[in-house]
Image 1 (cartoon, rainbow, N blue to C red):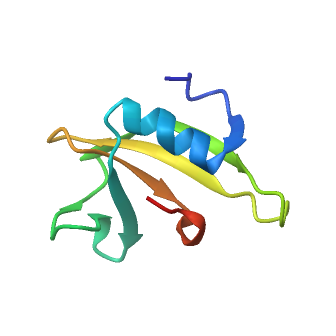
Image 2: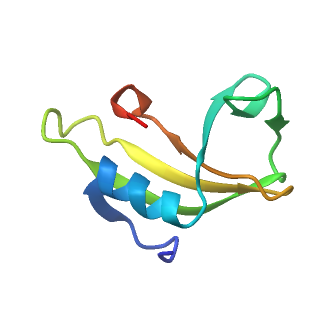
Length: 91
C-alpha cells in the first residue's frame, strides 16, 4: 500500500482490482449512524476503523468532481472500500 501522505491518481477499475487482491472486498458507506458495511447491519464509529490508503480517481468526464477511493480496515478485521463515486463502481 502507498503512504497516506501520497495521493495516487488511477482509474477506478485499476484501484479496485489492486485493493481486491489485498483483501479489500467489502463496500462501505457513511450515514448518520457511522461507517456502514453495506451488505450487513454493522456500523463503525470513529476509532473503530482506519483509512489504510486512498486514491484520487481519474475521471475523464468531469475533472471538478475530485472522486476519491478509500481503503478501510475496521478494528474487527473487515477490509473494504469507501468512495464518493460509487455510482461509477461496478463489481
